[in-house]
Image 1 (cartoon, one colour):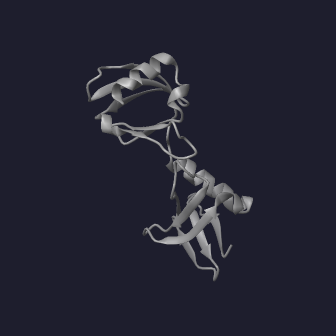
Image 2: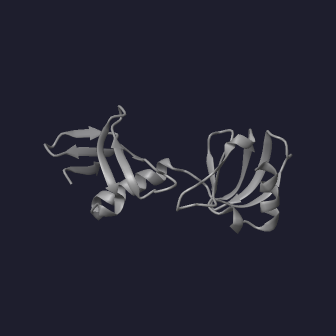
Length: 157
């Protein structure tokens, strides 16, 4: 690699290029967050310029991979829906009560268009649900949901 990474005193990522120049506030961005999360990661400056391209995260040495993975985890808050407990109505907007991998949650589905089918090898039977606050909830495999959750979901698809 012709660059390095470190954290500054505030915990932000600092990009160090081959000649020793530093850029603070670097952000890793996945090109294919759902279909290939471990491939195609750009390191982007605070001004939005791509500083480096990482083809495969696994190819990086551990000391570079770890801060990138930590930074991605902070940015990509995406609870996984384990069960749909109830919906306020079958017409949108609708308030959903769900159980996630992070506990119980309430989301407001503005429109059926906010439920996206995922394609690709990672989640071929998955769904991505955007709530009214812009939080994305993931259902990795809708067939793995319990039957009552599947029944509720079918009314919106």
